[in-house]
Amino acid sequence: MVVLIMAYTIPAIFISLQLTGNPIPALGLFGDHAASGEPLLAKLDQIVRELGFNEYTAHHADTFNMVLFTLSLMIGTAGLPHVIMRFFTVPKVSDARWSAGWALVFIALLYLTAPAVGAMARLNITEQFWPNGTNGEAVSVEQIETDSAYDWMATWKKTGLLDWEDKNGDGKIRYYNDANAEMQAKAAEKGWTGNELTKFNRDILVLANPEIANLPSWVIGLVAAGGLAAALSTAAGLLLAISSAVSHDLIKGAINPKISEKGELMSARVAMAVATYLGLNPPGFAAQTVALAFGLAAASIFPALMMGIFSTKINNVGAVAGMIAGLSVTLIYIFLHKGWFFIPDTNSFSDADPLLGTVKSTSFGAIGAAINFAVAYLVAGMTKETPQHIKELVESVRVPRGAAAAQDH
Image (cartoon, helix red, strand yellow):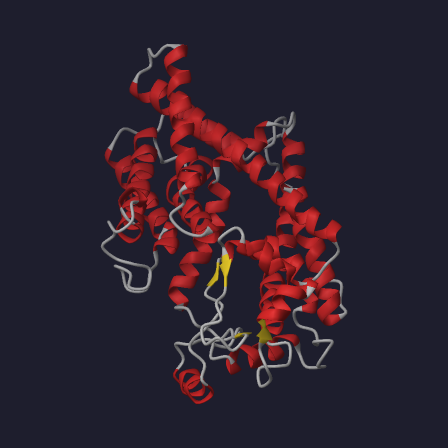
């Protein structure tokens, strides 16, 4: 995680220095644009508005959906299995607490930097396509092909994640919102034939950002190395968690306790193969896929984890019933919007027109968690009481080993 965050923040520091003179991206975001002297966000708002897009800082999304989305990401993070497993890799409780504390510091650094990276990248991209300002001439095809500042475009075009087309043959590449009525009128007046940046996959933004800003080669290499290291470490942790959960916890622990070690190993390999296939064929771009994963963790693991620590009323039947209910409802809601088992064209709804009001599939994890809690308490109340030794275990979890009883002074 530290490698990822360093690889993410170092380019952001360089870009913040370029645009605002402030080495702290989170502060540079609210600083002044060095070239114009205007506030950075005001400058960005002006540029995107003149190109027919919504203002960058304006509120465009539904507030209720955004609250649910934020909550899903928060509690989903706490329930991620490969994160929880890290607490078993240290010898002492104090080490786990220090590890969690430092993790929060680095995560806070990452989350404070992310908004600045997004805003500064949007400004850099827009200024590259309109180097003379939005009222001047757009970048020419010749400049893209010969100017080293635009080498990143040729590099990413080879991946199929970026493309452009000179639609009216005038040698210029114009990037604007051709769905905006005012821009349509302006385009008709000037002979433009639509947005000529025909493809820009958002997944490339973090890796392409240093190239777009023309940072030194070693910074670009650092980002690539950090991204690769983060991807491999996260994938390894997730595959280990998935395979052990399916083969040991689910199959051997609940379905077939007498399964042989060979059969357990085979089931682990099958689980890893399915997980790998889904990883290679994600249901959306990276951020959407991460949001869906966090939502599933929020709806299934987080409530059981919290109730296991703080409640003596939940028995095993209630906990399992809650997890199944939360996971099932969330999965069904996701499948209804993303396609059954993520098969294209099998969805009944879309995130542009959700089933439940404005609640998108990426935000449903918080509702799934609420269903998990409700079903767990309901089922636990209708079944046998939690055994006394489990109650004592739950109480002891929050008390440091060796601590004496509370004293009345």
